[in-house]
Length: 107
Image: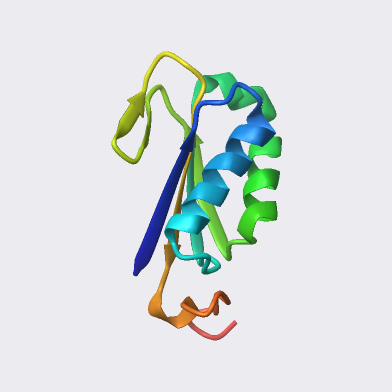
């Protein structure tokens, strides 16, 4: 599994999610993720849909999981008192060329 992470402290929800998602994608070498893990500070709670939309626009991950958290970690930083969005991308060896594929049982 390859991984990339990005963090933004922007107070504008969509911009913060886009910035974090694009940084995570760059750290992943530009590959499309099969999983996005998103953490947002309570500052972004009312705009959760905007956060998710921005993550999908950045890379269209096959799956997304996330939460609003009191503390948001990204890279070597932990943000406790201000706005923050952290995005972690995960990409298995099957998506190195930028295209995630279904790796589970047949649908």
